[in-house]
Amino acid sequence: MSRAVFLVCLLSILMLVPTSLAQGLGVNWGSMGSHSLPPKNVVQMLKDNGIKKVKLFDAEPDTMDALAGSGMQVMVGIPNEKLEKLADSYKEAQEWVKQNVTKYLRDGGVNIRYVAVGNEPYLTSYNGTYVKTTYPALKNIQKALDEAGSGGKVKATVPFNADVYESPSNKPSDGRFRKDIKNNIVEILRVLNDNRTPFVVNIYPFLSLYQSSDFPKEFAFFEGGSEPVKDNNIEYKNVFDANCDTLISALKKVGFGNLDIIIGEVGWPTDGDKNANGKLAKKFYDGLLKKLATEDGTPLRKKKLEVYLFGLFDENQKSIAPGDFERHWGIFRYDGQPKFTMDLSGKGQGNNLLKGVQGVQYLDQQWCVLKSDVRNLSNTQPEVGYACSMSDCTSLGVGRSCDLDQHGNVSYAFNAYFQNKDQDVRACDFNGMANIVKQNASMGDCLFPIQILNAGVRPELSIFAGLFLILMSFFTLM
Image (cartoon, rainbow, N blue to C red; front, side, top):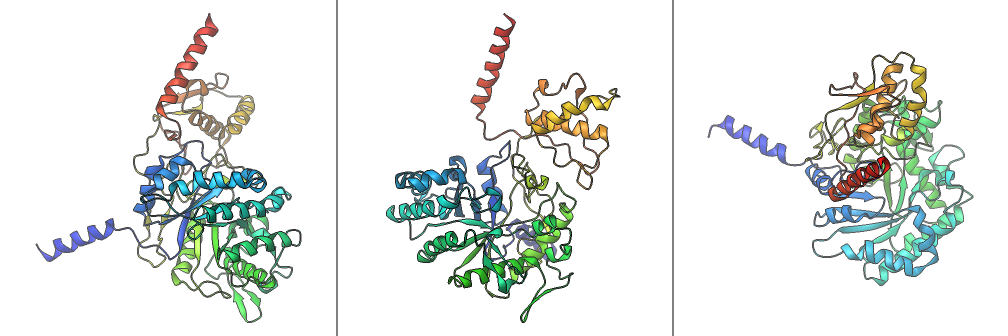
């Protein structure tokens, strides 16, 4: 074999080896999409990209079964709406642990490390709804884990939003927990400390920029392009470090300054706002991953960080109350394909597209659009309103990926509804103003998506549903 051929072969082999990740890196895998990808295919994609940690927001059986035998470290989640039952009944907590944790702790099972009790339960917008139930639910879950013999390996924690702490001076050293929930937080901190469990916090530099027009844009990134925040002898050049150290200061003030910290969510959306796009998302992730690769931590805590990127896929059924960007946090599109290049190692080992989910099944290559002969577009507004209320139109608008004219906006809305209804021909009528076309309706950078086959619907159920509709139509005509 010639030297040239040998080098080509060696390069080919190296390209098949997943790039090493920045230390402590994981991803959030949400489930609020209308059409889910096959969990086993998703797990294989994670493995293909070298991702070894995943955080869930529930413990859905198909997802857990797919993770079995993968070796990935898993944080399972308990939705906020279940906190009250778990707080009121230890028996409920025991049953939840039995069905969602111990059931999977076997040889070849799921490597569960944490149970996330609720998700941002003290968020200010919840107006205290979960404040009284989070602590007792946490205690019951941890007690149930201990009694099941799993407490040594699996720890219960609570992922908090960064709004549980504040700094009156905007300097990290003045960090403190919000007065309205301080006592509740301290109760939880005692449980975490007693069980040697990390404090989990979700930090979103994008939201700092989104919520304030006066926020220095470059301070949201990691390139040091804005004036630093000076705090004693420390200069903070990005809001991520400043936010982390504000938490550390708050923990110190209540006597838990040595508690470990996990960044449960951090990311940047790619649509739904003028500052949400692929270019800025890539800039953010490039800076974050380079930072994680150094293992330098933050000015107040010089150690590597454990960080979970948010999120894995776009989720078109998330609430858009905080903003339209909520449905566009994924580093992968709805169909499991990567949006932009990423170097997960943070060390310049390669800046290529991540490997997408394989074996994705799409519906037919057809789109629902506004008929070209429709002239009075004002007649389409009720139809557009209905279509968008039943699907996802958050990519539409000035400064977003789909900055279209009125005709294009209508077509996008019609197609979004049509695809969300699995291309049912009855979903492309809109009072006779729409028709189905075979030519790709996408316009420039605006993707008119083709929906995927929903892995969450078993084929036999789809067949049954179809037969039911046929029978209903038959009896209606009788």
